[in-house]
Image (cartoon, rainbow, N blue to C red; front, side, top):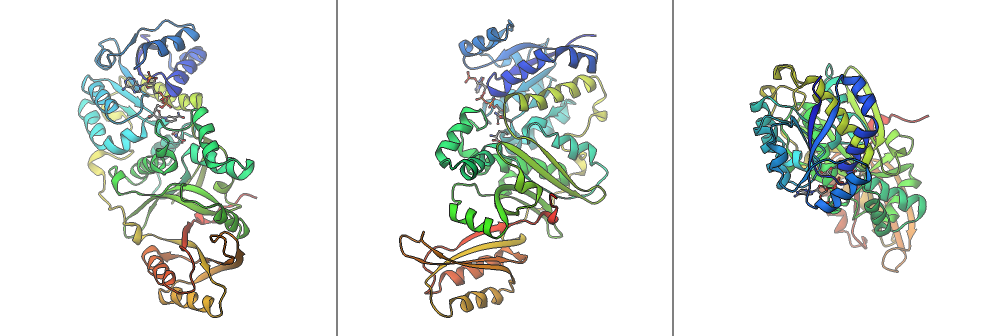
Amino acid sequence: MKPLSVGLLGLGTVGSGTLKVLLRNRDEIERRIGRPIVITRIGVRSLDKARAITQNMGVDIPLTQDLSAVTKADDISVVVEVMGGTTTARLAVLDAINAGKHVITANKALLAEHGNEIFAAARQHGVMVAFEAAVAVSIPIIKALREALAGNRIEWVAGIINGTTNFILTQMKQHGSSFTDALKQAQLLGYAEADPTFDIEGIDAGHKATLLSAIAFGIPIQFSRAHIEGITQLQAIDITYAEKLGYRIKLIGIARRSEQGIELRVHPSLIPENCLLANVNGAMNGIMIKSDAAGITAYYGAGAGSEETASAVVADLVDVARLELADPQHHVPHLAFHAESLNPIPVLPIGDIHTRYYLRIPVKDEAGVLAAITKLLADQMISIDAMLQRTSSHQGGNAGTDVIIVTHGAQEARIDSAIAAIQALPAVSAQVVRLRVEDLDQVAMH
Ligand code: NAP
Ligand code: HSE
């Protein structure tokens, strides 16, 4: 049978991993699909760098800086985009689609920002756009949501979906590394994005949560409406207090369906310490899905890395090889639901979400402070689940008291009103810290 002829755009961490896995597992892959997968041409920026990589792998594949020599080549039927970025990558992917080629990409930024346009073009040209590597690399989460759980109504998806930030938090907690050192290490290991602010500010996780929300609920891709907070504002003292209360803090991406709309958010969250996600460490990712028939399912695996990501890219190549000649009507819909059935359910403003909260309120140690705080919470109908009071030494050198409160479920707008009122109390000596608490239906590890 004719080999599947592939054009590769990018030969960095993911591109070189893809080439390596395809070469190493050539026979095993061919046994699965009945024909070889061959990289026919590689588009890159630096020819010298790419030549050194291909020579090192013992292959002689034509290299080019002219991306259209890949995207428009008659002898190529699949283009794998692993360059990153949203400008050149968008044009290259659209060029490939317009030339009738299937596309595989690991580029979540591209799909979160331009996915609606790219998938519409792909539908028009009857080609596949596969993106398993774009979310939680070695975990087949796109396939799980789009195919394995296709009989379910999905209620929520929540997970640790950025390897870099999870690696940083773990290095800081378990090895006492500084934030800066841990980030540098993540960059050296090839985990971080070209612009690491995408990782540490939660944007990369926001891209991934947006894609998961679209395929979980059959809604258009709405990245601009996602609420995103990273880990740069997180303070060590809150990690310590959270632990005393039986929680660990993780950067979590959440897509949840409620009666009012869709919650789509990424932020540091307190997770009960016996919950599966609280025990996902290093660059690993963990995702939980709650659906009506299957119940809660959980997924764990590497969240970043060269061959780990290549594993997903090659799996997409295998899918394309199997379905390449099928009628487009028999392809799995890009976003799990037929395009004409997408439902424009609104993504809710963050003030409308409903969850539990952790508050750290730095106060002067005076009589009546606690009563004043609990009254202001009660005014907003917020009830308290747990409370801790600790003498603090971190308030600018002045010893004071930290009042730490974990609430029951409340609407975020009410919490914000209560915090504003608490902040105005004369006894409150510094900024009130608010973090969200996610119980994830209390699925525990035993
Ligand atoms: P990388 O190591 O920086 O490699 C990028 C490659 O693309 C390099 O070969 C680079 O060439 C080439 N390139 C970049 N811009 C180009 C342009 N305008 N024209 C031609 N070639 C260009 O990046 P990566 O880590 O492999 O990531 C690639 C993509 O995969 C990104 O979308 C990323 O978000 C995604 N991803 C990465 C991981 C991971 O663990 N690293 C995991 C999942 C998804 P030069 O070296 O010559 O500049
Ligand atoms: N920078 C990303 C992460 C790569 O750390 O998760 C994998 O998408």
